[in-house]
Length: 66
Image (cartoon, rainbow, N blue to C red):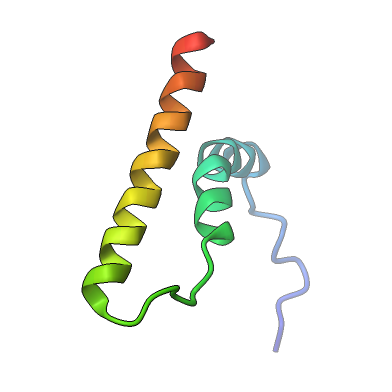
């Protein structure tokens, strides 16, 4: 049976706080698709590593400007 008043005890302010913290990171990982471009683990690991470095450098430039 589903409890009908299950949202009564929910802390909506805390949820908003968590959402603001999680949103930038969840956006990045949700855009990352599950398929790989190359055949072989080493090539794909290198590609993902380089993609992460590029993302962090782009993010660093945005954070240092603001």
